Length: 469
Picture 1 (cartoon, one colour):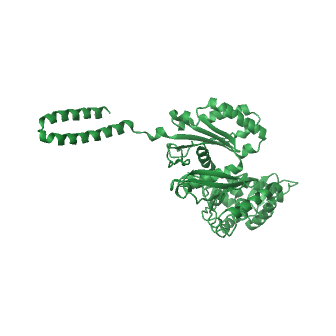
Picture 2: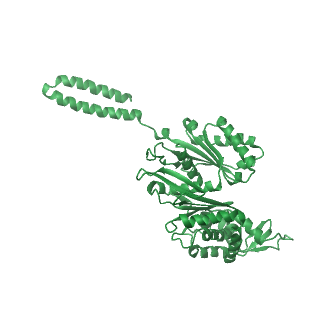
Picture 3: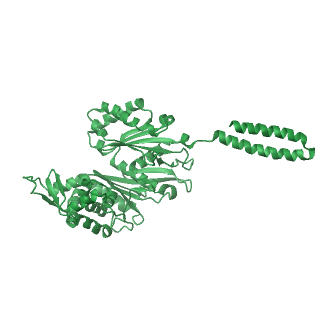
């Protein structure tokens, strides 16, 4: 800045001397020429002095996903006004997941689930405070007091006593604002239905359906270990829909999507296998190395022991699929599932444009077809069924050797053993929930343009949009 000031003074002194030495005829022209030069020097000086550092204007948000087995902190940021502003509503900001200096997305894990404090809620405050402090290093210190914090608990907290869950949340709401640097915006136990809405928002945002299409969205079909969620847009507001609004950058009009979401606790792959086992296998009277249950839903000669005793896989994929159809057709007729499934079928048939809708399969719909089968095509049985049958027909020892050699996307033996159950089960879900006559087959997806599709992304968008943050 000192150099610029000295340069300005020298130019001014030069002008003064030159004007006296010039004839009157050229003084006026010369004066305007010098004024023009001074103007550009001034502009250059202002830009240097007041140039805004993009890092200094970032808005940060930390979200804690409190799952059934662990908690994870994810950090997001955006520039204020990065969406297209319009007076009639809230624009969608350009949100980015924070990465470390090596380009890896920041994810901080705590192996102690929040639900484990159900009988000692006061202990949760110190534990969570210490956990949150680990995230400070990734956010500039001057931004700590402005960083928004969202703590959202899922299935693990939904399974404990509701009064204990309420007490635990109350302790955190009261105590955390005094013990951490961030702004506590929300602490709650979210429903499976809302989790499905968040996943739907995340998928369509990452695929840029809101930014570039503003009306043509995709559906989500997700199953994890304990539950299954399916969400899609409907043409009008009906029972159990959630509205999501923003300003469309194409025409500056406010756009509202009515999202129907439903969840089935027990249709996650882990819970489903337990239900299948309870239905087909009774505990053996004499559990020894010789006597095994023959299980067509396990790879050939793979062994698994659980509450029903030891099992040995036969790799009979078609028989496995037949059994699962029988078991889970009955499961959906249970009182607690029947009305939910009936509402889903009614809404899907009545309020959706089935011919133009594409569903993306997330979580297990990705892992089951990619980790071992290396299959990334449309999830049509005519494409993937023989590939999975070939996998299940091979001896367990072959697959264990492949695991050791790193030929699969995971090295965990337990995932390999469950592979021949997962694919037939997911086929059952697809055929039960998505009519075969749909033109667009379901597509498995995990990431898009380097962004991981997960419900936390959608949760951040939902909360900051609704709160005009």
